[in-house]
Image 1 (cartoon, rainbow, N blue to C red):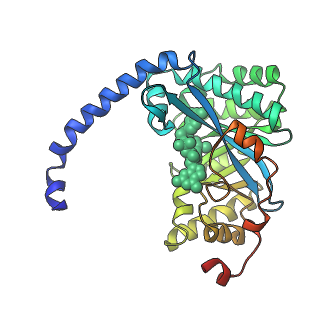
Image 2: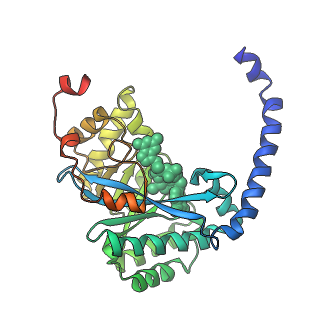
Image 3: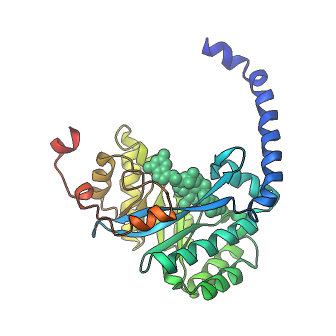
Length: 288
Ligand code: C2E
Ligand code: MG
Ligand code: MG
Ligand code: MG
């Protein structure tokens, strides 16, 4: 049955594509007013240090509370915002929100903000980020910008200059979704990242896939030997956490430690200790 579907895939898929394009067009239209109407909200997902069992910082993750459609995932609307350029104003907004929240509610904890390639490739980005830091009063070292390998493609020089400038201003730079892009290793040697985030796809394979385990372990080793901070993304189970801890992974992020939360809930949880979850435990206990 499924084979038949596969053969007709093109015909089956085509109307779906049109619907998708239609929905994208509608989202793009709605996006115009969404910022002014206050429909965007920043969620905060904790990042936990293995050494201290405490929250070292948060990743700011954008949510769109659409009046008719409910909450829309960034996976759906960020690409639309990037295609039409609105990501520039939305991105500036979330950066400011994240810095303001960090100063007011998360003293001493780091805030990480995803930066779109569309934002990052603009020459004005560095100056805008500098001004946001100045105006919100956040210590630049507590602000981490998450970028992806795709931003470094084809524009080595501009991107390198910008990263170096941001570093000289005191920002931290994280390489997000590590292992999913191109020629990862050459980027690691060329660009002065502070942090590497292992992509969730490797973490989710830890319990079932020997290659995912090997890759996770190798990336942790590489980051540690290069003196970079290493964060595992998408940690969902105690067994994944244990494996990563045994490998020497310094920080964990994922549903096991906490889902992205609206600010009020993140504030309530900010002093949480994860000692029980992260304490080294024997195989037998993990498996039951
Ligand atoms: P990302 O930067 O890799 O962010 C991590 C994503 O993994 C988030 O999805 C988070 O909710 C999800 N996640 C965290 N822990 C777990 C887990 O244990 N299991 C699973 N299954 N998922 C987990 P989210 O919030 O839907 O965001 C998706 C992507 O959208 C982000 O991936 C990021 O690339 C982009 N994004 C989100 N907010 C922003 C933003 O403010 N600006 C830009 N440019 N992109 C953003
Ligand atoms: Mg990220
Ligand atoms: Mg990202
Ligand atoms: Mg990621």
